Length: 258
Image (cartoon, rainbow, N blue to C red):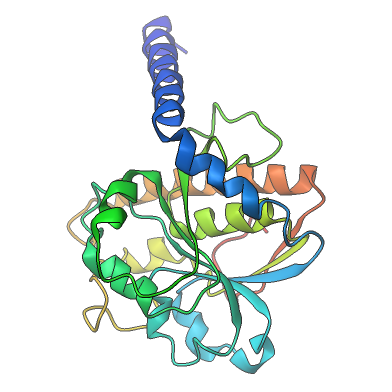
């Protein structure tokens, strides 16, 4: 490896760590609130529900009254009120094209015991006046790159591992809450097959933002997936270190890490 490549990478990593420290200092108050939910589900089982198209073929009666963690547009699911939703996750930062007041409406339409967001949208959420549920809000700061994340735990009351998808956010929350068995369903993760066109159980544009990356190069999509998979392997390392079993129960899933 050439020296002129190593030095800029080390410098960028240093800047990322400095940024992480400042993010923690400026958002310490909202992050420390997460401690009240840490380990509250110790030893229990949870299903983390992704929004992949396979969810349409899943026998949802198996989840009735079971603990689940859901994400984003799960409010469009016909059986959304059957399971016990312990957490609803929306991972979009405030600079995302998908972030907006409509995300609060998604939360309003999802009956959960807690709601989780990216730390950067905290001020915006405070300004919204149409939040009609009483369950608590929590925020996480996913700012540490996978190559710099050396912790054996997810300390969500501080800065933590970065994520590519809300699905990764949801798994980290499940581990933080203390679940020892985490089952994944709706985790098709077939982005390379679909080029990010309609990879969900619902029809895009019908109450949901259209995700279409066909104008993006396939190489760019592949690179994003490599980064995503590396972060899944990092999540698996933390899970294994804490005796947490993560099982992907999604039929024909491309996610082979679990």
